[in-house]
Image 1 (cartoon, rainbow over the protein chains, first blue to last red):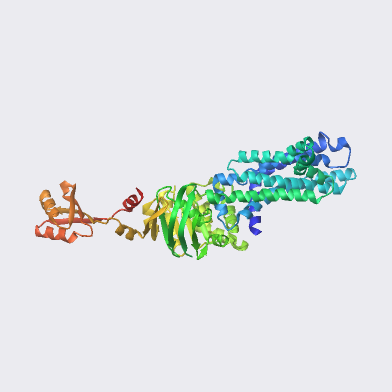
Image 2 (image 1 turned 60 degrees about the horizontal axis):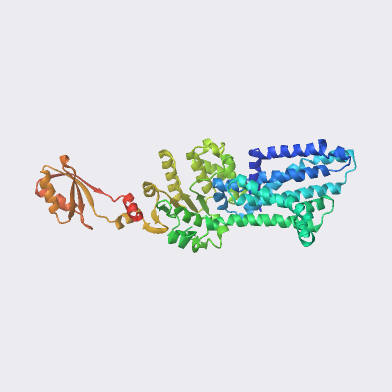
Length: 241
Length: 309
């Protein structure tokens, strides 16, 4: 556990030292603020004490930002060769993967915490449903964790960061929107299948305010799968060099 | 801690990078790994450090197999890869602290170890800089520092002096010799003089197989060690001297290296030494022997002979 946190701490430092973290936070808060308060179906337009507008915009901004955050996690180390030193230290491949995963998740957590002023503001001007808010943030966190693990996997199968970014986006696209679109055009079992696979379904389900075990299982399964595949991908070096 | 390699084989696809090699390194020994590029040195090192798997065979470190106890074993190995990969955006101190923590050093003890490494590797003036700002020599020292920071019993150094200037090379070699007093060291290099200067034993690898294993002296003895002497004989006619020398039974060939100065290169028959015969012949003919030097078979020649097929 200690080794995992050592990796997490270093990656987090690296995010901030390289300014990626600051840029991402500014962009994220900028978009969120703009579309929650000023434009589109913002709080004042729909005239309800709800943070739905924020959750809707964050659903998309996080989808694009997370591949950009995860693209360098392993790909850069493969390209520079530092992966060789990292994996020969007294740490397991699994601890490296989880450490890097947690570092990005922490960054997202920081981003979400920085939107707490929204909560305070809305609750001061109206009757805010706290249950809905908590579930909304939980949905965003689960979604983020899922895309981080997909992004981490994409980063582990290439040494080119751009390729990692694109693959991550490509895979994410299916879960984010394609399955959702397909579920309406298909009927019966296939339709149900797409519905179950679509991240949107589960995100909406949680955001509505009820945490169904079906949704938690969905997210945890995808997260575990992504991390497991990343570990497998790292271990492939042992045979191929 | 000793290292024992047993029947190690590793293939990249159909190509055998390491072909059934076996050797051992005793505790406190410094072994030099020599070989042409592509011979399998780096692959072998990557297998010892458990970065790569082997198809057949095993590596035993301190008696434990790398296949079963790799987590435990890695704590005792310090590795400096060929390319010396470092995190360019990290300051030197932060990086060394990170490495120390990863290797399981007690949190309170880390600053002491980092300070010790900075002192031993001579990077005091650069310690606050980001690694990307350092020159090659200092990067190499940082690489060595991270390999040693957890005081491992075993050091695996892949071409540790590549690209360093002559002064830095002397420094690093001195450092390795110091470390080698207590640690078990395997270092690979192309510089034959370095192997002689630093290592207790030499291993030559070619095409994935070990072609030589021994000290520099034993390798020289094994090689076609015909005695070669450079002599200068004065007070005599050049050609008659040459004729007389050729007549000596133990001498195979006499060549002129400098006719005007009566300098000859004399090759003796295998297993014979002609020094006494030459001296006696000079005494008999009243010639003056002003120079007699033995040429050692150069390691370069031994290397070439073993690796050029």
